[in-house]
Length: 299
Image (cartoon, rainbow, N blue to C red; front, side, top):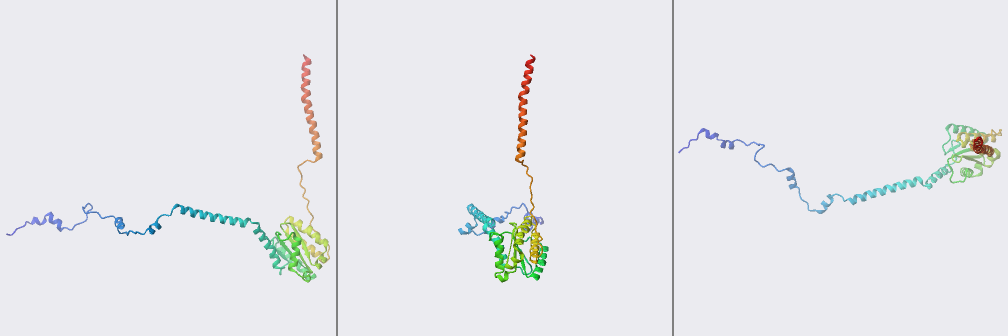
């Protein structure tokens, strides 16, 4: 027998669900996808090496404190070394002595007559000295060198250092016979002049002593180093040329007025004070007694 299906049977919802393609619904009953972290954790291989876990573990606290302590010790050591270099007297003395020995080892100046190691002379002064001393050397064959230094540590005073410069620059008598050396020490405000036998004789001891005791110290005390050097040069040149001595600056007596009284003024003030105090005491005792006597006598 043939079975005849009605046309409505083909549109049965059951068949429709089987034929219709399934579309995703937000509220479908299909199970949700597992989270990615779960799959990643499942796919991550588990290592059984204890060294690797130990390296990945955080550093302990005592290792950090140990590194900080080491850095602090290094910083303190560097600070101590810096203070030692800046405050050590040996280092400072070595620098000063190096300057003095540089003057000795470099020899006399070739293009000028000045070794301004202290750096206190101007270009004008150096130019004037070159013209003045160059003219003297061309006429009289006397050569004078001026040396300025800040401080002396290798020698006791400027005279010993000037003799050392003369012996080092002109070791033989023939070389230093007509040579003169003038040294100016700026920190000590003093100077010295030395030279060969012909130079000392041409200048004369009086002019040498006067220049050392007047021109250099007086003007150097006021820090007039340019004037001190140039006035000394003119005085030496005038002596060699046989001209009258131009002289040097005189000492300025800076007398400060004292606020203290002299002995005579103190004695005078003391007598006046005694008289005034005695008169007040007499008045203090006599006047009340006189008033009391007058009051009693009236009664």
